[in-house]
Length: 244
Image (cartoon, rainbow, N blue to C red; front, side, top):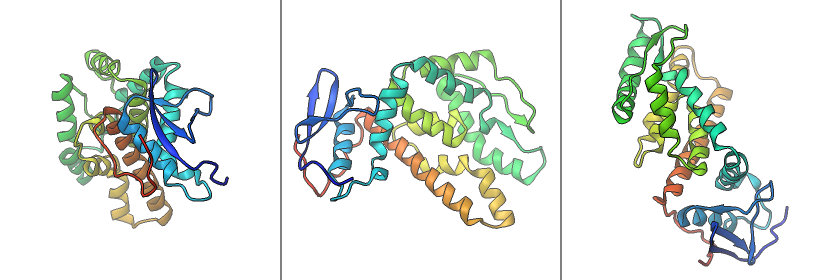
């Protein structure tokens, strides 16, 4: 699709911050107003539009896609999103370890346990660790506290958390990635520990490496989106100026 607009502006309304293309407000695929909660996020969305060339590349709208997901998929039923996220806590990857007395189990203990302990301290919960793949239920109090934490999040934060948690298969890691100044490289390494362990043993496979790189980019995008929702991140403006 050829670029169909000349100017990109920001506007604040009762619904929130909006991006205007030639004074026309953007809508989501479902036809809702694309209004976001912070100026920081709106600026980043505007930069995606301003940075497009003569031909629009949809793949470069990574933040816009997350905003649309928050508005069209999460906002109508945030309880369903919270229930899905709570399900990850019941089988969190960081709680399922290799058989005891193996090198992998020792590696998991050294890398994963500090993250689990940090979550236990932050949320006042206790996670059951399991050796092997046999399911062990997490304490009811732990699940109740985590559900209560999820109730604190708006649809935009829930959208980011859903991506972070799905990619890492861990609510512990997803919640940690929401924290300001989160150690994202460490968290992503923890999420991929077993894959990386296998790659070190048997060699790297190009297709798997490419897939992990794409997922890593999506993880970083979701973490940035969450920061923008908090209003923490004012990214460098596009080379193509836009007005506020």
